[in-house]
Image (cartoon, rainbow, N blue to C red):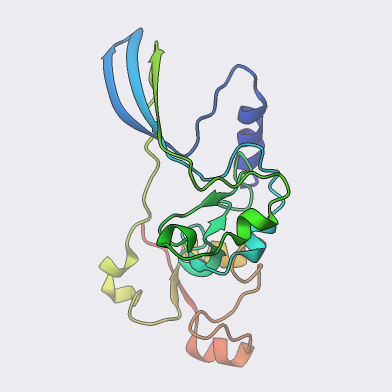
Length: 202
């Protein structure tokens, strides 16, 4: 994030760039110089006037798995994708939000001073005509359990380099404190005796 955050903020501040987040490419047709792109913009259930204050997340009663922190249960049903996300707008996960499950909650809407919460938001289809398309698909982390000789997925204290990086991150699940994953112990003797092994698969 030390490298990416400044670049992401430059992109959102550039008046010549339109940044569409929480959006997927539905279809692409045409040829070089004349492409038609159909985009599906998913609802955040939070309007752009969100100030990113975090009041909504603090009052949300539902803890969910945090993909950014390698699956730790340290995220709420309304949250930022990650702490330095751009734009800094909170998003409700309808799969976990009590309001979408038919229960009465609405605590986030009550806590929001700017009235940004909107449970009625719908998907939008956006169609653009563009001259060029750059495909950057990203990556998926290798499943280290496919290398059983390293013990990942067998022993609780074996972790991947990505999981270690998130644990050591100041915005990670342990706020940068190195602990034993099996029980979050800080006992150095316990750590040295059982060993915390990091798997780095080439």
